[in-house]
Structures are given as C-alpha cells and as structure tokens.
Length: 330
Image 1: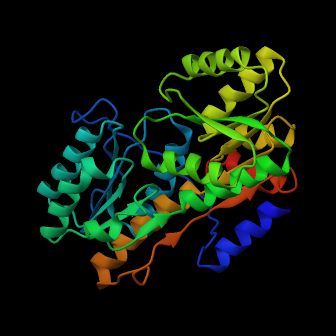
Image 2 (image 1 turned 180 degrees about the horizontal axis):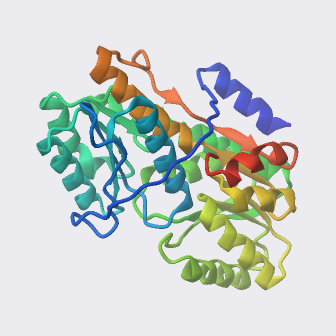
C-alpha cells in the first residue's frame, strides 16, 4: 500500500517506532489548578522530575502518557510529579513552580510553544534540563531542550491523507479538537498535502465530547457529499463513529491516536486506520532522558528528536495491539 511505503520512507529517514508495556496510576490533586493532579510516585528519591503536559482531564491519550511517565519514575526510583493543564498560562505557571521547588528536570508538552517559551527558557537558564514530548518538534532546540520525544506531525498527516485517498474518499473533514494546538494543525496540513480530494477543517472541543458529536453530525447532515472523516484524537474518533451511525451516512473514518475503543472499532470495521504515536513511549522516555541527565550527565538524541511514531494500526494488526491498548500502554 502507498501508506506503508510513505511510512517506511519516513522511518528510513530516522524514525524509531518503539513499543512499551506496563502501567501505573497515582494521583494527589493539587491546588495549583483544577486539572493538575500533582501525582508523586517516589517522594523519598534524591532526584525530582516534573512532567507538565497540556492534557485535559479525562483524556485517554494523556492517561497513557502519564502511565508511561509514572512507570519510568518507579523503575528509576525518582521523585516524579505529573501535572497537567490545557490552559497554556497555567501550564507555564506549573513549569515556573517546578523550577522554584528545586526540580532536577522538566518534561513538557508544547502544544502552544509561544505561551511556554519564556518559562522553558527560564528553566534552562536556571540549569534545569528540559525534554519536550508530544508537541514541540519545531521549537525544542530553539528553547534549549535536550531533545524531543514524539512524532513528526507533518509526516503522520501525510500518511493519513494518503490512506484516505487510497480508500477512495473524495470529500473529508479534518476534526480539530483543541484550538491553538500547532501539532493538530500540522496534521491537517500534512493530510491536505497528500489527499487527492477536498479536506475541510472542523473545530470541535475535546472537553465537550457530546457537543462535538453534535457538531460533526450537523456538518454531515448539511453536506451529503462528505464521505470521509479524519479525527485527530482517539476519544474524538468515537464521537465521529457515533455521528456517522446516527446519520446513516456511508463515511470512512480514520484517526490519529489509539485507545482500546479505537482498536476495537478498527477490528469491527468502523474505523479504517489509526496513526499511533505511542504516548506511553513519550512519557517513559521523557522521564528516562531527564533521569540519565541528572544521574550521569547523559544527553540523549544526539541533537536530533527521538521518534515514537508514527505507526499505523489497521485491521491487519489491530488484534496484536488490542491487548496492550486494553492494558493502558498503547
């Protein structure tokens, strides 16, 4: 298939598609923010690492990132603090607070690099090592981070666009669930560059899944020529499947990111494919990279990003992934 050739070319250029397993969970709500859990996995350790993401509460993708980070914290016996907030101003404050608290390193996702630039550069200037994960591929070096762990959103988008074309889709929606997230915008742009039909962006809200489903359904009803949907998140793909079912339309659904429901929907033929960036790997390797820096002065990546994807999940390999997705590691 063309999509496999595209991904193979990307991997040959330097992508490392990794796999991981294991999970953990612990939380202790912090007063800093309503969406900050302040989890701490090893309070007795001499090395403190703070993981600060833009994940919204209840988002299954970020639950997997957290599981990977916390497992690394346990494996390496570090004092791990995981916090998140989708508000970029609050996320920046969490970074500032971690530096003030004497953290030995910060792992941070940069969905909105402009809003985090000052805090990240201040952390680096204070001698605190930083690794970016998930979002921030284009800015991590400029901001002074050690490396970035994630995927090329542009390459992943191109693979998705080609997959839609190969499926014969002509008129598709690209459903963006987080306003201002540069990585999501890159996914749609990449998909448009390889998609042979028409791809229109549709803004929804990941914190309001029911409302997002209604928005998708309304768009389908308003334009009967829509025959494809590209969702940019695993949770949102479920809403797209529901919207398609409610309208009775013949629409091909593809998505980014994986959870157990996504993989099951692929097996059931309700979703054609999922582009998997392996969030567990991002959390685990982000923490491990900071740990090695604090312990030995090691710098991972060799001046290049560490790629966790993209990998593609289709009906051909969904069964192999499902058990890990059900376990919270894919």
